[in-house]
Amino acid sequence: MLRPVCVMLALVVSAALAPAAQPQAHSPTQADEDIARIVGYSMTRGGALAFLETLSDTVGGRITGSPESRAAAELILKTLKDAGIDSAHLEEYDLTSQWRHGSATGEVISPVKRAILIGSYGWVPGTPGPIEVPVTDFGPIGDERASIPARVHGAAVIVDLRSGGSSSTYVGARAIIARRLAEAGASAMFIVSDKPDRMVYTSAFGFYPRAPLPVISIASEDAAFLRRLIAKGDVKVRLDVQNSFPGPGKERNVVADIKGSAPSEMVLLCAHFDSWDPAQGANDNGAGVAAVLEAARIFKLLRIQPKHTIRFVFFSGEEQLSNGSRAYVEQHKDELEKIRAVFNVDSGAHPPTGFAIHGRQDMEAISKILLKPLAPLGADRVFLDADFDSDQETFIVAGLPIYSLRVDPQDYDARHHTIIDTFERVDPRMLAIHTAVMAVAGYSFANAEQRPGRRLSPSEVQELLKRTGLEQLYQLEYSAEKPQ
Ligand SMILES: [Zn+2]
Image 1 (cartoon, rainbow, N blue to C red):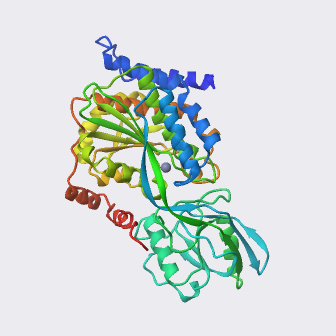
Image 2 (cartoon, rainbow, N blue to C red):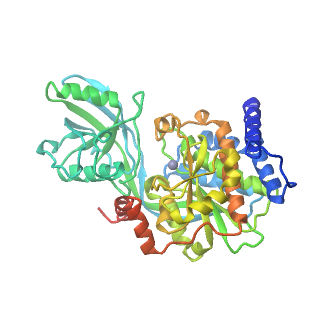
Image 3 (cartoon, helix red, strand yellow):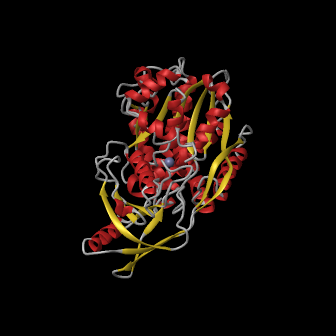
């Protein structure tokens, strides 16, 4: 893959020259030199790609709490240590609820006999052995508080969350409907997959620590088939979903520092390493882990010492309830004031566009200045909108300045949490650019004269959540650990 890398490097170099149409008036500063070396190594070393291949092919899918998740943490740790980053270590935390992903099979048994393509959501129970139940169609969710018909009792219920125009967020509506169907005695909830090519989807958002009934993704083609049958009469399916909950367990984050020359403050570069297991978790979020890890190795290799410390944090548990980042914030609560900024990458390796600052208007002007070195990489835009889509939620709630990498998502959504989140679909050039973007962001913020923003007080955080429309999701996620 030498050629594409060379072509891309030429593009990056020409892009770098573009804004400075007028000749540079001054000779390069130390920062100019450092950034040029960081970007050069990011583009030419191939380190992120090599690590991602190892992670994808030797560990593969890594569900939180699984032996594969432990293996991933140990691989990250070993890779950092091998690079000479002696500060690298594991930080263990308690996981309230472990989950084992068993097989999920389904077939229509009446009026015809036909296998259907299904897949389990995460942190949902299995069926009590194989069950034979009627199927009923709940249809699109217009309002998750609408009355639940009696016919759902004992049935597998098809629910369409795609086109409902629900009053709540997608995740919120899904969790609320699951609870209400369970209360009404439904045997299972079929959520119609919005993936192409008969693929199913998985997620645990809104279900951790334990969903109230088996929640099952059904391929849209198979749901359409069931609906055609239902239109003509009664339909029965046989379902066998074999998930289990082994109880509480342990998980771990991996943390490593490139120590600053004046290490009174720090910048965090973060990515989550847990994934789903129908595939390799290559783009979500092996790519982010590989970029952040390679950034750490490049600082070490080039002996670049920033003014303030750059800390590299690899979280587990993101896919459940951002458990890893929550544990980090709890375990490091005495040093949160030292954090200048947190950078999180969980976007897939697609063309970068900039960073979301999640409603922090107070950080907008200064962020535009501090992100300037990322202009040649196309990653200097500042987005004000806020989301809870990854570990940023933990840092938003903690009131810290948090930057989430934004990209042009291309086909990200079609692959996300499916059987095709595999290594060879990750674009090596974009992975190299993400490495450069994260490293340069860390470098610039760690060397900046001023901090991008202050830590918000708890009441200011609540005001921010209200203003950005995240309040309902916050209530759902921050009450989720309560027993159900
Ligand atoms: Zn992710």
